[in-house]
Image (cartoon, rainbow, N blue to C red; front, top):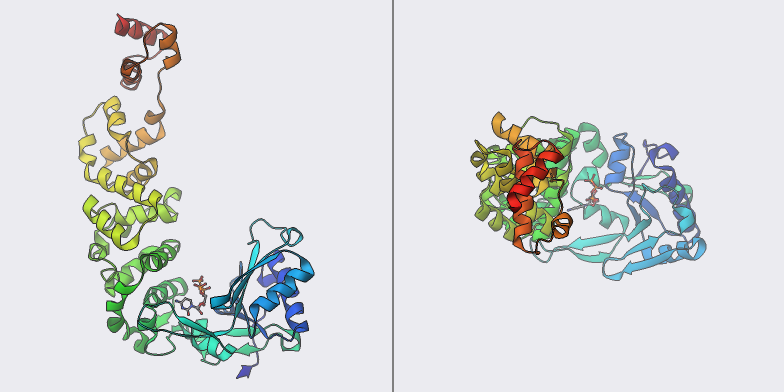
Length: 419
Ligand code: CTP
């Protein structure tokens, strides 16, 4: 099944560090007589002419043996995951010259995978490269290029991935693919929008019967898929497409109507919104606190994201209360909210008056402090207690509301308060 390879894997395809590393792995695999392949998404992106940041390597044989041979020749340390036939090589310092590239290299033994039940993690057995390609999600991800010795550059395309890649078609390898692994429909939609590919009709038709099995995926697995989507520049189209395919409702009913979310309607390329957490907030801030809690039971958000989501949902529900407040009241109102939540909500809010209030709080008001400190009050002989906070709050309010504008005026107010 080896084909002539029209793909150029050259020095320019990879960061310099990674290219050098690839050469070391090739040499050692060649010497040990181990067939070595670059596989999966790395090959797909090479064909598409994208520069790789990293690559996936598969060894037909014992990956741990290869990793140990590399470490004994070049240094560094190896850990193994024997159940899955994978080895991680922690690179020696002299092989890490670029802080942008990873300081480890994963080596994977070619394997076959079977699924005991839908959405289970696969049962893994050592296998050939042919098995390893057959276990994969889509034909375009089931390509490999051999790297060792004189085989360098030979293409393995057992499942006609190259033709699909050239025609821009996404196709599963067998009809049970989505049932075995219900994360795959989410990957499918991610690739569809990322590469502007078309989903083969027969593949699209398999989604409805797989949908009920989404509920069987662990929180961590489904949340990871959503994280990956939110990392994509075209996340909105992907979520819209998932909603249309009923794949968001399959995760949790509160996600069903994507068009209700701010993320769907907001047209902003504000830099502070271009990261994963901000996008989660944009997507979910319209939900009530009970809905956030219920979704958390399904997705197990990280503690920090959960805090931001709760805060954003609460703030979003209470925004109109900000209208007509004095700056000092705004500060007291907003003080308990997460700054991150505030930042995202203020980008998303439609009402201009409310947006202005949030922006002023975020850009200046929250930082306002009186000149007087607790230390000064102590020097004045005031016994420590809740009165300190009360006085300092009163002084801050005076600055915020324009009652005092100079240190002198603050002193006068302080004297009055202490009387
Ligand atoms: N894979 C699979 N089924 C999954 C996840 C991954 O078959 N549920 C296979 C695919 O062949 C995929 C490879 O494992 O190409 C590596 O997976 P991953 O790193 O998640 O994806 P990439 O293809 O590298 O793509 P990207 O990170 O760009 O999404």
